Image (cartoon, rainbow over all chains, first blue to last red; front, side, top):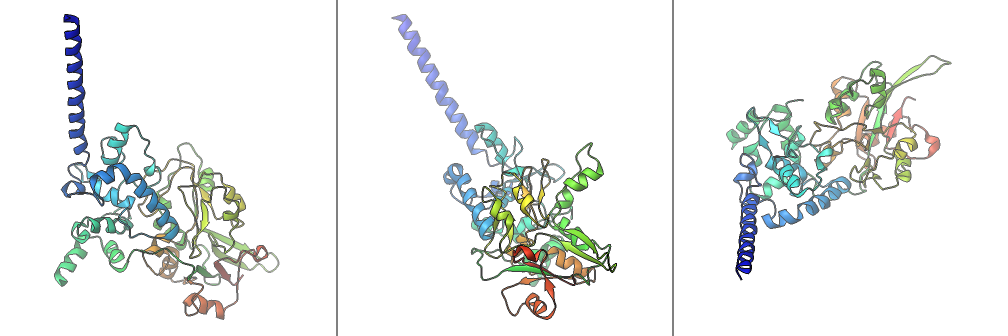
Amino acid sequence: MAKAAVRAGLVAVGLAWVLAAQVVLAADAKTYVLEGSKAAALESCVEPTDVMRRKHMELIKHQRDETVHGGIRSSKHSLAGCVECHIRFDADHAPTPIHQKDEFCGACHAFTAVNLNCFDCHASVPRGPGAELASHAAFQAVGVDRSVQSRADGEDH
Amino acid sequence: MGVAAGVTAAVVAPGVVLHSVTAAPRSEAVTSDVRWGLLIDTAKCADGCSACVDACDRENGLNLQSKPEGASQEHWDDQKAVWIRKVKLQDNQTGRVTNLPMMCQHCEHPPCVDVCPTGASFKRADGIVMVDRHTCIGCRYCMMACPYKARSFIHKVMEDQLTRVPRGKGCVESCNLCVHRRDFGEESTACVDACREAGHEAIVFGDLKDPESTIRKHLAEMASRQIREDLSLNTGVRYSGI
């Protein structure tokens, strides 16, 4: 009888731990949009947050075909827009590559152990004069006036 | 209003703001109503000038490639990605020397598209022949098929790419007529601008299907040829004076 009670107690403790872990994880998930990025000041992304969490890869994949084959560059689902909005800057005002382990894309992909290969080819920080144009539509969609937020980039040119 | 615009212009680097004000991104898919092409007047192409090549390198981030450690300069010159090559021709009987820039010829019937096993090498509706890096597997059949030696392969992991020109290890690439400029409604290519600034005006860019375009008027006036006409590829890049 005492054994059964101990066992039940242990199960209860275990369940409580699992529940607590879930809560902690959920709280962590909320912090994936990082302080210091433009995105941190916005209500939501170009789509509602739950849609972005589950479908961002599909949105980007759909868009890439339209852009490469159709030349459409006015979509809010542009990878350049993701980078421009979620990038953070270090103490020297240099942008931190977004696929690094503690940055927006890299942190989640490291946590879920999903290989992130967008940035094998794509710029992981906004670079070059075209960067601002490429993310224009995404910023419009979330109601941010790009002309106000513009900053001089492409200084390596 | 005027003041606000002035402030914005002052904050952003000069070239950047001009770039972004004039351009509007394309929102509908390209159609075959236009066909982009180049006309190169070899008589105006100067010996020793590399303005077009240098401008192409800057525009498309080719200048951001770096020589792998331990590789010889000669090896690197062979391996690095190049979109425009300056070619010098000499007629051995007369001694006449001709200079010309050689890039992807944007064929109507591109051999690189014929041989591509994945469909990565493709011709856009507006005539631009390019590579979809998302589907390129790096087999390099297209490089072998191209009669113009126009394509390059990226052998090493890349960093510091430009936002407008993605580039990565294991993919083939070539001149895409500054496709990012096309999609933002700009008028010319980097090589055309550079050639004009260097005072040569040897390259004309435009729509081969528009009877009123500068390139069509030039083509109607001067004798021009396709390189390797015998292959019947109907190239989008034409040369005069050869």
